[in-house]
Structure formats: structure tokens, C-alpha cells
Length: 129
Figure 1: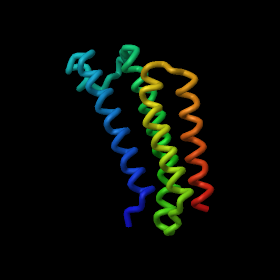
Figure 2: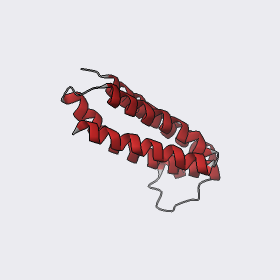
Figure 3: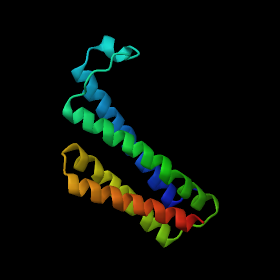
Figure 4: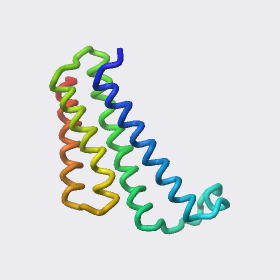
């Protein structure tokens, strides 16, 4: 059964995949293909924007790993509610806005969005129990 919360999780996974694609495209524009195809044992410094994308990507993969268990539990136990839907919506909207806030260095907003998304994740855990 595809709940609204599960649909939001899938949407977020797609958003993270798009960010990975943007980072990869940016790296392809900066580095030669030989380096990109290598084991990259000799690290190179990423340009500022690509480095920010990289950090935002890893933060978002962590957020994805944290939000997946409660959404799966809510779905598997048929516990979907208006509260779980709102928490999932807050999570995905905050995480969606987090990318440009991080990319363009809007520090206070970035932190507030991260915190709101994290609290929404915590609420999903609480609702799943």
C-alpha cells in the first residue's frame, strides 16, 4: 500500500538523486575524465559550490536514512494519520528548501530548515511507536 508518507519518502529519494546528479555534473565540468574514472586516491579540492553540494548531499543521505524507518513502520502498521502526513510534509519541504539555503550559504535559514526537518523526523518516530 502506497501511503502519502511513503510517496513523500520516494519524492525525497528522487530529490537526493537529483542533487547527486548536479554534483556529478559539476565535477565533470571541473575535472578530467581520467580523474573521475580513477579510484581518486589523490583527493582534489572541490570548487566552493560543488563542495557545498557535496556536504548538502551527505547531510541529506543521512536525513534519508533517518526518516525511512519511521515512515516504513507507519506504512507497515497502517498507522498513517493527519499528524504523520503533516510531519512528512514538513520534513520534505524543509529538506527541499535546505539545498538552496546550503548551496548559497544562507546559514541561519539553513540551520532552521535542518532543525525543523530533524524535529519532523523525530515526530515521525514518536508517531510510529
